[in-house]
Image (cartoon, rainbow, N blue to C red; front, side, top):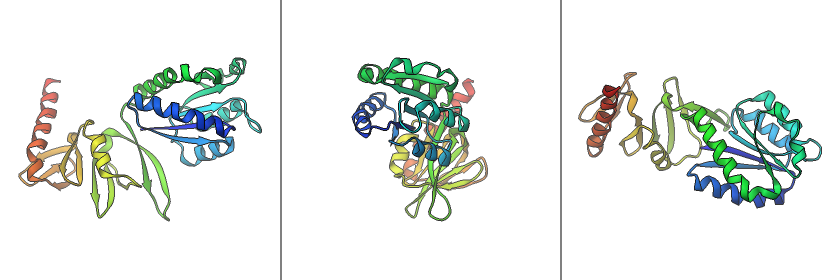
Length: 247
């Protein structure tokens, strides 16, 4: 999933552009969480609090109090990786922006025509640079939550227990915040994971052995295996082994 920020001092403009952006991401089959900001300071504060978080930022250049170029300068001091797209009312505003590592410019009068192509290009660039990065919201102490990025290859398994969902990585376990386990199953079943019982999905790369009623992971962890799902787990596991042999 991509996290996207739109910042413009005109709330009506944001409300008008939001359906187009949602439609574009849907057409590209990309899950996107879109956040709207009418205040540059609010965007900067969110960025500082949760960095790294936003993958794409659409930023109006012509804003009162703090223009888009100054906002971009301050954000780039925090993070160099996010994709920045300037939104402009006048094309000359795009001058002298090279230092901000801009991924695109969108004239407000041509948004309908140009935005889909810009989003597709930027999203493809992100995928090529970080093809296996996963973003999660986790619970931390004092009822707070935090955004983290986890390499797909670091995820060993996810499980639902007592209405809570846990993410288990090579290093530690995290309590996820506000996720539906069925949504996670749908997302990860095409990313090398397999459902071993109703409330657990495992990264096939970490399976060491498969017995009648349990599987063992590379780190020694054992997990129960549903009889109904055993054959599917075996089939998927053998497919991974075959790919390794071909390599």
